[in-house]
Image (tube, rainbow, N blue to C red):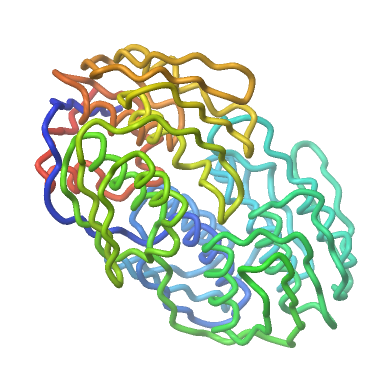
Length: 417
């Protein structure tokens, strides 16, 4: 076990390079199974979720070689269509093996997924999609079994916008017979990224990034080389950290249009934001103003940034309300931030935050991945020393987060707990 010791209250200044998108990587890696040969995928973040997925790939017989931020994946000799429980329990993205294995082998056996405890996260829309393609799907002893003699394209309307279901259905439908149409599809950048990766392998997917995606099945997918997009959530975390510490940060290797929901809110709060072609500069401009935030599927405000944003709202002038419309249990971190002086209360799916002048250092724990990022931002913002526990949550999704903050002048050290 490890912890961060942070001495906060100093403005963060400098440049930071953003890693590849976690949410893209965890889908693209299983998607490579659909090629019966060797794929080369670059800009992969070296985070725990990546390593967990590679363990699963190796278990079923995929050869993987992870060098720097590039993964070489050879799926030519897969030996199993089953993922073991102990590996699947590590992260939610294990469910992408369902779509990938079903798409290639017409059979998959994957345990119910693990991941952060942020409320009920059903996979009913995934199952609905697989069944619409002709698969028999049932759950027995916690294992999801999906089998089909063949997959046939179908019209699938998602009852709720689901990133995971949209991607999983794309994976399964790539080599199905005929045309598959996904309506009410998720539009997140990583959905587009996965579609682009599949197209690079020879799939025929159109409409990714809109709410209607059309997939024309092909007989096989070929090897390819591909680079995934930058991580919009990591970029947002550093942008919020710049504003909350009254710093001046240039965030490099980003796609500014992906950051527009956050950029608009920061500007509304009085933060100076300057966009470049592949960079964003964020300058603290005095104490920020309170705003209300409602999380929504893309292009709405991302649910994965409401936790770090609570830190900035916590030191803003006035009363802010965060309404969480994606997950019903994502405010557990509020109790930890209260230890640092956050004045907030939770009412159902909303957190009401009364701004205070400053936060004070304290000992806190990460309750999940994005809450862990919020604890680090709060510790860097707060006056005095803080200790952040449960770093295993943070390491699941942020590559060398402490090194990047140190480059910006942050006083943060990882030590044995």
